[in-house]
Image (cartoon, rainbow, N blue to C red; front, top):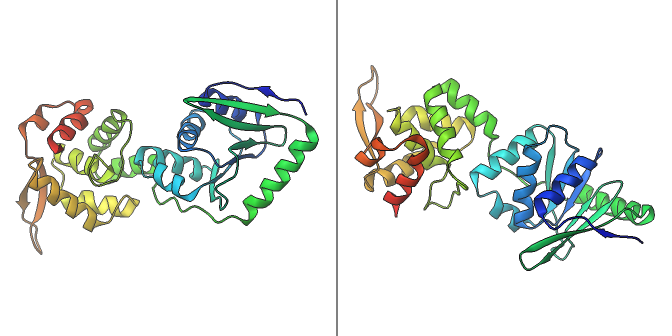
Length: 271
């Protein structure tokens, strides 16, 4: 069974395999780094096979805790380019399997290599076996909404300026993890809402409707940011019911920051 070294860079390996695959590609037990690179590479290609990812549940949960990555993955799911299922056996090899080749992803220190074979008999056996595994696996519940939907609804429901600021802040970040300590998607939403002096009711309703978080989560995060001096509020009377709260910055340094600096300034204030 002949084999050869495909490449020594995970991004290049994935791009090569995706571009060479016309039918379904099975991605078996990828590492966290491989999942991140897969979403990034796939998002930049216009012609994709159906990607069936069989991953360790804890790895998928950890990786998808980053809003930026998860929302881009959700776009691929929405476009029927990516499907996610849970691999029960954690001892499986890391493989890329198409009807034409099998690529084993091998980690040696900080280096990743792709050992590939196109031996027809071996490829057929591997493809059939993991297709059967796929069919018996449970779906991974990706709860993050697609980024394209987040942006379009934010523009339509709140305003183009808020959407531009939201996109600008995301573009300045490498990750947006919802661990409660950094700039997660709720914190970012509230900051750009404060920059544009949007009502808390409006941004939290939008966030709940689009699937980012509940109104209660928005309210709790607002209180935390207010207690730390990043956000301030003012009451806005309405015809019926309790006054609503308009969000504003609570620190002059946030007012002075450009959109691409907002995340770093806020992060410094949070630490």
